[in-house]
Image (cartoon, rainbow, N blue to C red; front, side, top):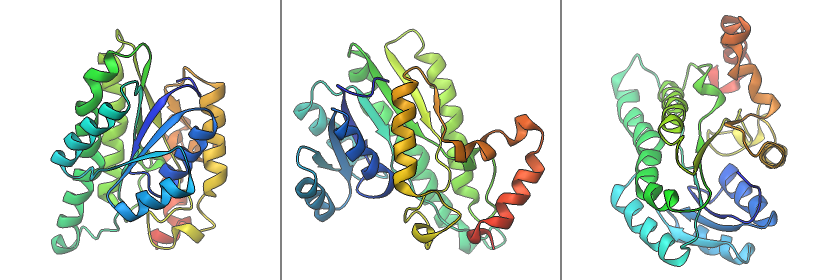
Length: 254
């Protein structure tokens, strides 16, 4: 995707990677719309970052997605970039169904059905634009599992394969599919992650992501250096060692 001159909608971006990316993309000359479930956070973002538009959306709710899509397209008919950012991560114990079933259902609804429904809501509009991009968000954990987050790992693996598949289907259209693959980043995705030495500082991550988008406008996958250890373990032939290292070093795995 081009790094500037776009109209970008990022649902699920009232904090963390989503908000930091929204601010960075606005600074590069894009019109940015931030979506989230909490009106007070959206109001604060609009006040703190003049020019960023906001819309209420709950990506776990199909009706909310449809309503927000209509609002966004009515206000921003030149929208040409959708970033399916929203996601949740839960620690689960799969030896105890009462520990994981509700969590797993929630993770799949938000992390898999959410992006699917978002793409469905915007795909016809995006195909009508001269140049359009859908940015999906998977994870290094799509390729190497963290043992305490089975549903999250599986949901991000699903997003990776979804991205690969719809890229093939849309190859003869003007819609590009770009998969963003974060490593652990210092956000509130899990308790304590904001202060974790294991996780990548948020500002460093977003700076590297924007630099990659700018230098590699035709990239299919956006991978900061820190994620390649997880992304390519199987290709390198050291997958078992990568799994062992990840689950021995990440404090959430202990």
